[in-house]
Image (cartoon, rainbow, N blue to C red; front, top):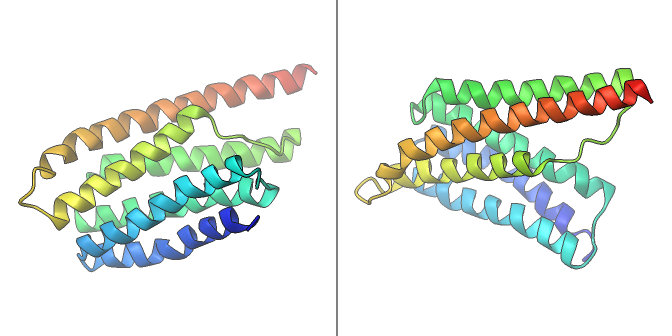
Length: 182
């Protein structure tokens, strides 16, 4: 049972291409339902790890790793289907690329190996995934009130993405400055 949180993260990784394929095939209801399962694994794996002290170094690596392909590939699929504007997809991709480059640079140049997720980064991921769910649900059930939520969720996602990216840059530069003076 101790490895259950890690297995849930792996399940999220495995479900990502299934969700993306459903989006590309315009099977929005299926993509939404499978995405809901993937989203549930994201919350459940962290809760189980904290509740039963099933934390592990592998889990600390797998959990955020499982979120990245889901968000990045999901948003790319949204773009190819014309479901969200490309400016939002660009923000999501650029933010993640900058985080990756900064983390790799800090690891290579400063030997900093741990990059704990910030509360703003976690919130951004939640907002990005929630907006993805809203977009899918609005296209799965177009006669519901859900389409009214799409544009506000897109703007909120853009703001959260920019804010968390700026916060990450500020936090990392502060950390690098401290390691240089030490």
